Image 1: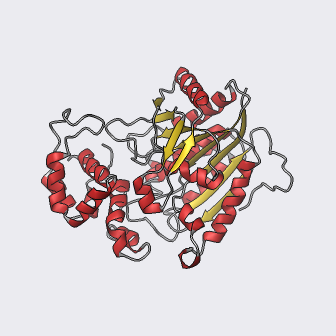
Image 2: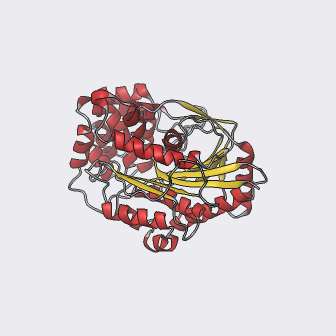
Length: 119
Length: 297
């Protein structure tokens, strides 16, 4: 489990308009590129001062590749990050609030307590 | 010493800016009532004639991130740029620039550390909608210097609810011991019950109207004891997965003081979440002609 890395993916993609589009159009390619190039980048350090140990599990890669926000929730990815990024990618294809409501409906089978989101 | 001119606690709803400025078919049916309530709420700050605003809010993973996450942070800088690309994208929020009040920020940091609050600080802070929403609603001219105080209600492990209350009590004491003739308003925003990214989001009301009813009563009556008896880090999961933002309301109850009834109370039941607005005047309500304040529920 690497909740922190899932959150880092969602966070770094969400804040970058080009990455938002790239992840929408090519999720598998974006996830592979991000894990190879960005996962070990420390955001407040210069590029050469990298971490060496961060990687996704196969389940995490799959959930990100498939834009599976339900699986991400169940893995404990921060729900605010997932929601914000997914609204940015998919709200445009729907009527007002239609996407947000469908996003919630897809999780109706999940009951309290929700998965832990602590990192 | 500085005077605490007003204490204000509010929800921060990022949709207000777009709802209140939209026209024609784009204007939601609830916009007019919402604007009327906000204008009334705004008047409660205007009549207090503040010179400086202490703004309590929470960064939503904008500048603050999990590789270096402070629990409580004071912004000390001459200026604060505000709002981020994803807030522009999702909420249509404008880019803003606010002045900072560095003397008060330095006082809060020094005095706060000496009182046992290990406050983090930032000398270059871009603030987000938890602070700009109340600027837009309460002081849209954005002409007053601010001291941002960020709390972590977002990235567990979080401080205990009691710690938020204690920090609020300390902020009150520290503002009132600031060697200045300025009038200070302390404004903080949080949430009532709220669900983000979970099955209960974007419903007809907030996810837990019963919690909202109790929460408004706690805040309006200053019932810190009752609130602390029921609210814990665990209990806040039940009303909605983003309800830990209620702890910023608890901080503001600490600023206002135990048993202090709010001078202005108002709510608005919207889809997804309930709005709630509170103002206290610690030194008595200002006497401005033609201005009515009071409980409006």
